[in-house]
Image 1 (cartoon, helix red, strand yellow):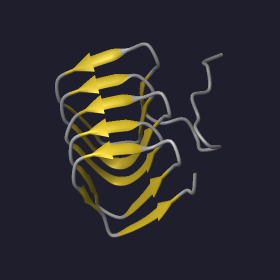
Image 2 (cartoon, rainbow, N blue to C red):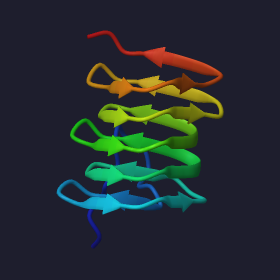
Image 3 (tube, rainbow, N blue to C red):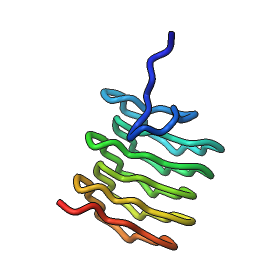
Image 4 (cartoon, rainbow, N blue to C red):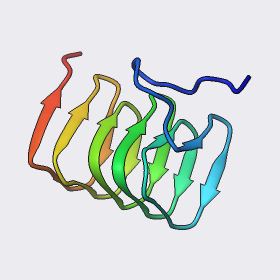
Length: 104
C-alpha cells in the first residue's frame, strides 16, 4: 500500500517532492503539489501548493492556492488564498488575493 503523504489532514497531492530530495530546474503541475525537500528553480501549479516545515525553495513560485510552512527564497504569487504557518519564512515579494497568518 502506498504511503500517505498528506499534510494537515488534506488528501495526498498529485506531485510530491519528499524530504531528502533535491530538485534543480523548473517544473509545472496541473494538480496539487507537496514539497518537503529542496527545490532550486521555478515552481508553477494550477492547484494547491503545500510547502512543508522542513522544505527549502530557492525559486519563483506561482500557485492557485498555497499553504507555506517552510522557507522560500524568491517571489510568491498566489491566485487566491495564501495560508502562512508559524514556521514559514519568505524572502521575496508576495502577491495574493487573501492571506491568513498563523501566530507564533
